[in-house]
Length: 145
Image 1: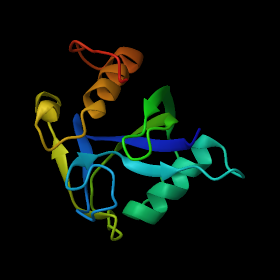
Image 2: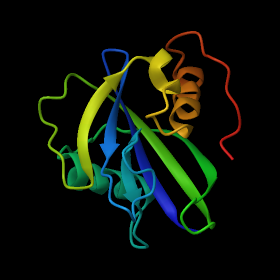
Image 3: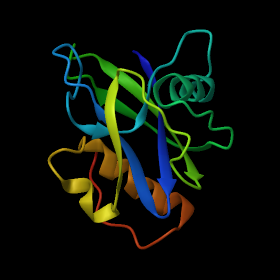
Image 4: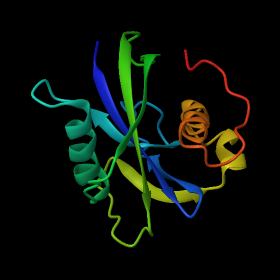
């Protein structure tokens, strides 16, 4: 089971999502999703999430808060992964720079998380964010798997 660290980043009550590159071997090519990736054996999920943010989007989120973890079936190989999700509010996106894994980023309003260009699990993770941190009235949620 692979461990995946993900960062749900919030800017002015909007969700900062990153557009995946459209490489043929990429999972969810061309869709918007959270920053993050595989956690190394020598890392905790938090350390892996911080490293992935530095590598992928050029920021070092030092105030990440644990949100939740989820079992998730990997569409690429059919294996079950464990997703560890952390969250942090950012003041702005000024320091963001992208590595080749992403081709852009965008701030999404919560109601826009159901768009076809957003990885579907994102809205469920945002729902959990609302539930745990009591930001606003949550929307209906479903299981990720």
